[in-house]
Length: 193
Image 1 (cartoon, rainbow, N blue to C red):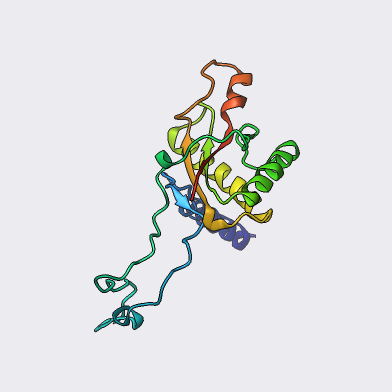
Image 2: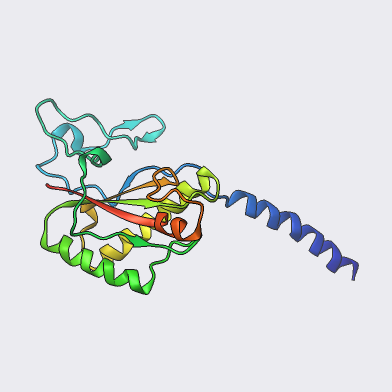
């Protein structure tokens, strides 16, 4: 009996430590779904990885002068603009899963994106409740779930960029549930290639 109690007392601190180590990220960053495929042939100087006394280096060597290297930096949000063809989708309070009614909207958005060659920026937004850090993380999860849905419908990941604004860009500023529901959204902007 004493052995069981001792085991139970040891399990509690281990569980608390595990919960502490699995915490949420503080600041989500703007991310691109994936980098575009490389173009051109690799230069001879960058074909072999460099080595150091401690082993192979994980940093790429600089490209030879005059050779173009593909940009892996996503476009800036200011480069995107509104499109009447893409409709926002909305989320329940403290959720980031796609609702059935919004899935139909995303199906229409995906069909338009597949028939056009535009890049798309998905902005994740939240209502004002919660901390800034929490809302930034929730906005990123909303943008990612929207991106994943579009990718499942056949939109290329290399065309999608996401960003979270959290509660910083509300469409409605009243203190009511109806207004807050308008702010919990994924918003779409496009950029021509």
